[in-house]
Length: 227
Image 1 (spheres, rainbow, N blue to C red):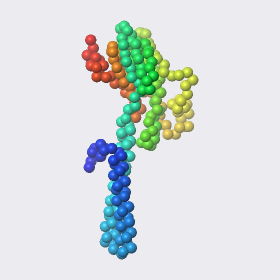
Image 2: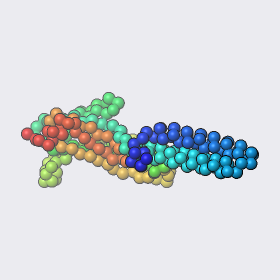
Image 3: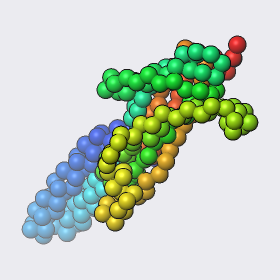
Image 4: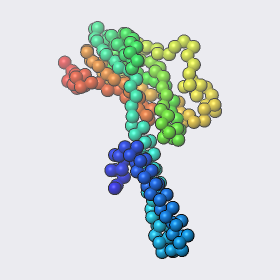
């Protein structure tokens, strides 16, 4: 079995196989003891070989299962917010934001695209492999113009997601990094997409700590083929 095939197996299955290999090794260990007490050296050597094979397989399968678990965690995405857009006038939009818990917020935005930004706290590798997800806090939503000249002179809109007096783990990690030794870094992550009337977008956070924005199929078609 090559590594590409191995990485496609569920980690739980690999751990079950590792437990079976360990059980096989324990059976061989018991048999080895009996062979030594019976003074049968050749049979003892054979059981020792089986014991080493069982232990090796158990370690290999357990290590592969743990590694696979880490890779799958890094590939997971957590939903952050959905964005629905409705045009009011050229470069003026009404956006509805919906969070996974059902909370909604209506905002007005100016520009040709929307951009969302967040502060992300990323853990060091041992914590990531143990299943600890990155933390994030939405920071702002802003409009973005396609033309840099418009970006410099046209009306700017920014929606602040921070709450007054807000103190959380991300803020603590930035202010006192020595207090949280398992924190790898705190950084900003952002994503943006063009606005179209009736557009529907989803924003998610990858285990790597990157924000990802995606349009649905109909919105993607409107972006690719504007009227």
